[in-house]
Image (tube, rainbow, N blue to C red):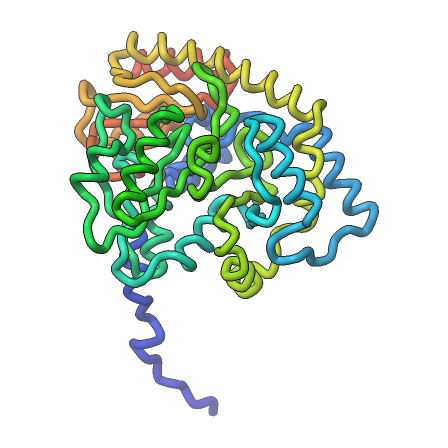
Length: 395
């Protein structure tokens, strides 16, 4: 007779830090949307940050060639030296900024970069200052290392961005760094080089660090793409091959850090990831080529047309758009005319109209219950159908 081993309550209790990591509601909403779709319902996906484009063919072809050539083993933990050089060359040719390849750390997605930065730079109870609203996972990376996301409400008057005045007002003894995004998720707003310079001066005056999320760099509609490195060489940059380069599922990103940090990040990367995806890195070698960039620029124009359509259509339905997005592929809309519970509103819209979009509760606390995010990640005809369905439903 097999003896039963008594279950221990200790084995079922999760670590305390997990209680500080909230679920990403859009993923649950996506799962329900996919289930409805599998059951035969026509779903228009405006919820997840992934346009309806596949990876540009030259990039995909380079990845397949890597497999054919047998380039499937591990790379160095910081990534292929030749790809780090390619990224450095991109900064020089696109932005006129000289960055040593040694400062470029390739990671499994930009999320991997932020994981390394949080591990390397945040101690227990340190605070990472963030604009509210903002990408939710950023504060959760801090929580993984028993640090905290310090959410600062930022409204339309500030274009949903941190300002030097906010740095001055809210910086505390435990604040270690400020993380801003340009273009931002969920609002699509951009910080000018003057604004980035002002933030850098304010943060360094406090003895802190400025981290800049440039993941949507290149997906610009009103101004030319810029990098904080043009005005602050010691700023930390997060970037990704996912958005502009169309490589979401390849999971490859990078960070640019002060050279004195690189050895520490190398050690952490060896232990946490071992190395980024080899095939993704070989694919990304083609991302900066002229034929790839031409495809990405054509897609940016398509996204610009979708943006213009939604900026006209959403107010006609009764949604307010306090600040038009300068970049990314989102419109952050005020839905207070319709709801004070954005999650319930989005779920009802999905179930009753088949239109999926994201509740503001995913992006923080300020205005979260009355705001929603529409991703213009479907073609114009599908966007028109989505607006038609919502018009009938709201009326």
